[in-house]
Length: 410
Image (tube, rainbow, N blue to C red):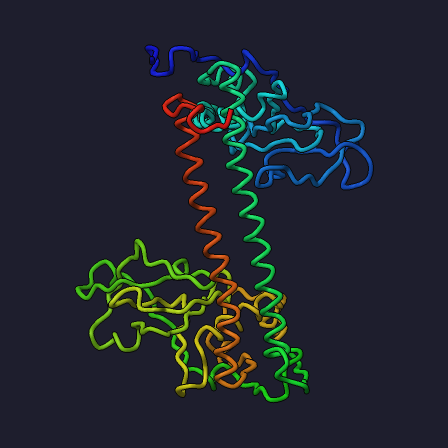
């Protein structure tokens, strides 16, 4: 049976400060804070927050205000309401507060506070300094079930989080495997195929049978069209890709803007399946392959479009993997002699040397690396499903709409 507030009849609503201890951080004397050495790990604010646990940079000796292991750490200054969990004791600065609960209910308060913390942003927006104080935290309202239900809700949601973290760990491991595999294949070639190797000034080691050619000899490179006011007034509107549409190995065609491209410009600025797109700015060198996601799509000047000069000379995904390898190993920076590259100009790109295996070996290298990418993609899908399930389940459990007895083994 539901009560007047929509919660189960044996639930109430409490304020956070009623059942918890709230410890506000305090800035210690500057002389007590040091980079490394002895002392308790010190957190100035949410800048040291990690995915779930903090990553401290400084230490404080003697310590000031202390957050204990298991406390919920809350950012009380912009951005207000960001949270982490204390995995050890920390000294906390003025940008943080610690919410302390009894041990067997920590998980419940962690998830209940996550659901309720949106109200803190509204409070902080009315503050001159975009901050909240102890009273603001203490007055956060939480649905409050009986103790056994609180413990069960915490265990159920924690178990889902553990599954999410385990999946994230697998994804990270697979990504590291891909990096190592790519490094090995692009320097040694396919296992057991090559016995002699050569060195290159910029590309390091490679099989002697491989060629080295400037990218401009392998591909025709065309920079996209410059955006202009014609975008607002032109009659030949065409969807176009910008720099932000291209990430490593992926192209996002949702919410594309329109560009004015005349019919006689389409051949120059439209995309065909197999086209290689390389970002000119931003994260320079970011590369993906156009696979015909739209029947007609163009691209702007922030992107280079590459097409092989001759058939059966370059596998598009091999170029993608080469660019990923080049960026990861700073080959572009070493080639240009710059300390960093803000823009990858066409003049630079055409001259970048590329290691080029025989076409059939390229295909086998691509198959090997893409098999690892596919596994990571499947795992990412599983992670995303778990996150969506947790979001829906969390809201249901913490309002009593979903009875915890139907999920918990208790």
